[in-house]
Every structure is written in structure tokens, then in C-alpha cells.
Image (cartoon, rainbow, N blue to C red):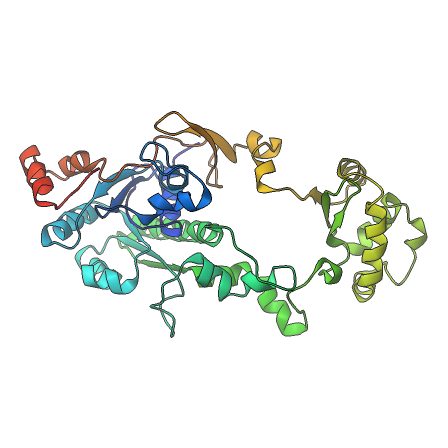
Length: 401
């Protein structure tokens, strides 16, 4: 894949998923991303254990997912010498990406106002939980609470009755795409003017944008949560097949495709039935139409329905489990999923960042760095000698494992 951000340097002071994911996207696009951690490391180094994954230094697939293609540095930001090193690093960087809370950044002198006074060229990007204003602005904001719970997503996109148990990192990963795009827009202006700026994204704001159609529709009597029995439309709904597998129909132009659907399910008698053959009529009589389609789908297997619906050019798809996507030819041939090797040689299929430039080949330059792995290399780039670096290590200004 082409690297449009080659030559751009990004300092990454992030943890867990949303912030690291942003910097990973920028690294995949060619930026030289320097991951800065404390001596104990990003806590996400341990998160994979909650999902039954290994968390060793030489095999940590969850951590690598959001931190590969970066160089790693460990700096003690609680001492003046460490802050001085960080400032030198920032002086030569194009962008700074963080997911630290604003209060912590202010205490370190790494908030936007402080940093831009020293380095007016820098693009400063932050992901936080709830935004920069309002009563929740200082609250801790993981995607489970800020993206899922407060936005309505956790309960309104679930089957009616109980909240969804959200997958780890889902909201984080979508939010990281937005911040990566925002940083790139600011880098474009930096190239034109030489000036940096503040780029702000929150998990709560991202979730509201993701739910933007519901934000509009719920003001006009559209009620959530729904079930498949009161779906947004009977022809935009899930249906069980004879083999207990499921198909999702997605007919957005009801009047255009209703006749074709009736023929596919063997109910030509419904083609001119005014109770069902228009968008509004179908919605008004949804319970009855869903029951009719339910009965029809139970007559054939999923494979048979895929064949019939494809021949009729009706939008649909198999409802798959994530584990099935690992071997999905469409995902593999587009290299949305690629097999990569950990340091110990274990291979694992890994999701790739979604945007491609010019070709579909992924940029897989290196595994996620160990804590402080590139300390010496990076400090030498900043002009320090081996003697200086030995002193930093001895005094705990930098650390490595």
C-alpha cells in the first residue's frame, strides 16, 4: 500500500484502543509514529487476557493490533528531565496524538494551550470520553460508557428487553478513524500555513454521529429499541432459514423490488395486494407481512436463499458470526484480514485498517514495540550521546524491559 504520510512524525501518548488505533492508522499510512509510555507500559498490554489471548512481550495479538508499525520510547514524564526529553521530541514532530484526560495533560504541560505556545506548528489531537465542555467533560470515558451507554446505542440497537453486551473496542475503533482523518486535515493546513491546531474527537460525539439517523427519526414517532417483529420495515429485516441459519433482507426501494420478492418467496398473489405493496402499507401491516415472509424462508436453506435472492438481484446477506469472517473469501481477497506473525513466530489473522491507497497491500513493517524498545535509537536522533543515554537509564528518566 502507498504511504501518503511518509515523512510525517507523530508523537503518540495514548493508551488502550481509541488513541493507539488513531496512531496505528497514521503509521499504516506511512507516518513515523513514536509511542511514548511510562515504565509500566500502556495498560492495554494486559487487555488481551480478558479475551483469552496471550499477552507475552513476544506474542500479544491484541496490543499489536493497535500498536504495530510504531517505534517505542519509555519516558518518565513525572520528572523535569523526562518532560524536557518529551519537549525535544515534540519540537521535531508534526503531530501529537493523545487519549490522556485534559487534567493530566495540563499537569504535564502537554495540553493544547501549553504545547502550542511552545510549538505553534504542531497538530494536537485528542480523543476523550465526552467532549471538552459540559458536566461530564472530566469523566473517565471508555467506549463502554461514553460510546455505548450514554449515547443510547447500548439499549436502542439491542433486541428489545435488555442492553447489548458491547464488544471490546468497537466504539474506540470507529472513533480512531475520525481522529485520524481530522489530524490529516490539520496536517494539510500545516503544510499550507506552517501552523498547527487543536483536533478534538470524543467517543460520545462519535456515537451520536453513528446514530445520526435515529437522532433525527426519534423526533418523528420512530421508537427504539425494536425487535425483528417491529423492524424498521418488513423487507429490511432478518429471516430464519430451514437450516437454522439467518438471512438479512435489505430492500430500500420497496415498490421497485416488492414484485421480485413475491416471486422469489412463491407468493405472486401478494404483488398487487395494497396491504403490502408500498413502503407505508408494508410498515402499517408489518406484523402480517413479516409472518408471511417468515413462513416462506423456513422452506429453504440459507444457501438456497442466497442463490434465489442473488438471481433476483435483491439486496441481502448471510448473517455470519465474527469467527466465520476469518475465512470469508471477500475479506481475504481484499486483504481486510491478513495473517501476521508475532515475534515468537505464532501466526494470527488480523484485521487491517480500512483505508487503502492505490493498492490493497497492507503495510506490515514491524510488530508493536516493547516498552522503551527504541529509546537509544530515538535519543540519538535527538542528538544525545551514548553517555547521555546511559545517564538517563541510570536515573530512571527512560526505561525499557
